[in-house]
Image (cartoon, rainbow, N blue to C red):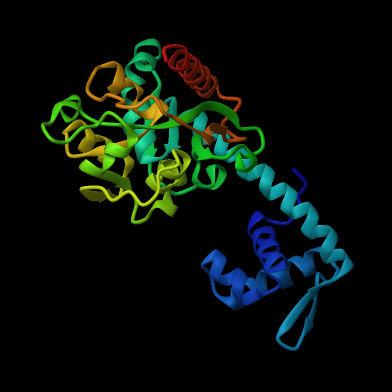
Length: 306
């Protein structure tokens, strides 16, 4: 190690100030005072023997020397950060965090996890079920299952499952006296179960779009129930509270088990699907590769069982 190499503390202070072009904003980022950042930059300039910033009234600007050092400092800090993150991961127990929607987690992923746990008991699986799109690198999340159209799928994403949309209900609803359910028009005798405050929140599960696709207009159901999560919609359908729009991969297990039935043959093919995204930093880890392979295998088996 060269004795004249500037300290990491000085480099961090300079890099933050150069990126923000502000000693004040750099200080807030580093949780120090503005004068501390100013002293760090001055000490670094003294050590190197060149000015790194042009000080102007209420503004700073990088000199040519400052620009060159900023590029080198940014690359060096990124390498150190990645190396530290990899070392931390190496020291931890094997774990894979999966981000996905609440509905996908409860209706498709969680019921299948025992198979992976049996094959890989040393891997700790963590399900981050929410309906927000997270930055995998920033949040340190290994995998995400994104529900979107092919055009919006992230670069490098692998398609897991497509979807078809069709009404589903509990078997007893098919035989209720005075409430037939033999044709789509008969939905007027039943309560319709909705996901979200309005149909625009979940286009594939929109009763409005499904009825339009069936060329049925101005249908007035016996009632409506709305839920904030899709798994709640399906549970209400299983309990016989009304008719829901089933999303093929999410309701298939309920249909195969006889808890739900599809009263009509008509199905609506959605352009959307479920895509698997892998964090760049996590991709080389064997346990992540094992979980990706398992997910793809389960998705293939699910489609073939239809």
